[in-house]
Image 1 (cartoon, rainbow, N blue to C red):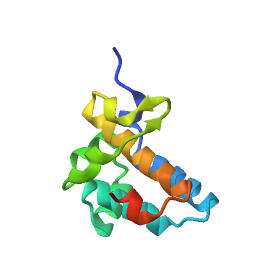
Image 2: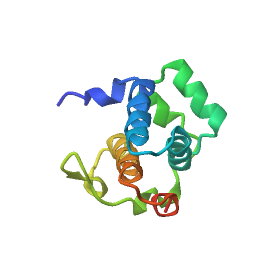
Image 3: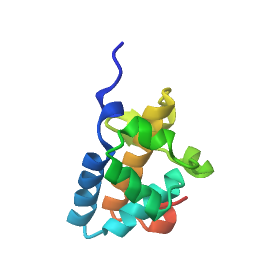
Length: 115
């Protein structure tokens, strides 16, 4: 089975879409960054470095300092698939991030998003 294309997609390209999605719903780039840093353990400088280096999703998550231990509490459906049932660890992390950005865009409070 071929590897999903998202694994080799540049993170910076999707990051821009995350920010656009949030801003369309009156949320901020800073809130998107806060979510990404919470999930991955990057600080702002580390996140910016990854964006500037053009890291793909595989590299972005491989270099992540520490996936938040509460990420296992993320539940729900993204693209018709329950995130808690995804078997591939990298795909699950990507979908966790998608789910968190979706929650932000739907107006959920940051305290609830950052479990």
